[in-house]
Image (cartoon, one colour):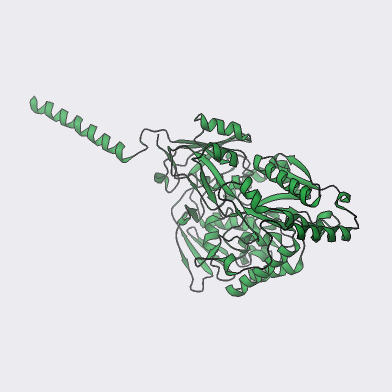
Length: 539
């Protein structure tokens, strides 16, 4: 009897000790793993081929998986278990692991091939085709020069082997593949089944990432749940992620203060003063003014665009309005793009720049010349100038600061039209504006942002047409000599800085709020590129 009692007591003690040890080893044991954050903008699409906005990219990073991915600044393996690169650096062979879509169907090399070729197909109308320019015959295919997709350097040799052949050795290719937002696989059967409604809702989309999008209430919320079919599901601690879409910042921050959300995706400079324990990141995005170069319009006059650009005190605006981490930029090429540990922008300097603090005398000289060319006697004779502004606190502050500066220094009046973000973007895409503040990813390759301004590029929002510039950009795309290639980029950048269809302003930083019990949250190089897939809650 005593032995029985002792045995029972021993077993109880063992269970207690083991359980205590297990909880001590796992800091999240017993804590509901639900991460709720607030953002101000909805996603635009779930279609990888059409995706071109920050918020869609943020969600896609969680609900889908590329061959490789960028995490905390490092390239890690995704659906690809390994890869090989040929001796000449032009052929990349990716070996896929055993991985499934969220419905249990295996992910194959054909899913990647289909996705990439669909993006490149002219019938798709993707604005992201230039992301594939380093791939053999990709440009010829999306421009219609060739119609046979089998000639494009994207081949699925079998279910587990994808081979990508480049035009030339590209030192930025892997980083681009890991960070790009258009390199995810797509299920062909879903596209064929849902047609034009494909990826318009959780029911018409399927992914193979760490989470599954289970609910999307447009302009209100998105709900994601852990994908039990994900190949690395054991590394994912969160069971659910909810993004609440709250356009009003004060309301959103108020919810954060009350503990109704665990984090706020991005906040204005005002909130960083009120909440000093904010997080910040910088780099990866260029904000510039696009001047609509429609023939015959006031913005089509080079000297007038130069006058507006040279009058801006960029450093003063950054100091007064911009978020921590924001830096003034006086050229187009992103100085944070590196090659062999050196900044491309510093290696290839450009004497043509824009003044960080403005140059009022030069701006006035440009304006005088512009008025003469337009046959006007004074700035008061200028036609109506429409600045389309997105309805966000920071964008309003930018617009008002620029408006005041132009009025004060040049006596040029610009009208600000504030529109809800979808309508503002619509005005940009349709060219119904004179001035627009644009933010675009600079990518990992120095030609990423410069290619946007070539003739016929769908991201050429300024509607600028310069044959010499376009030829230089095209030449460098096919040039296997890195030194010659970067020299051509340098020459192209000098042209755009001299002609001023766009005026580079700054590289915005981003500030965000998060409670200290949120662990493992990380913001990547791209502004606002929140990585929450390995986050967990430890209250």
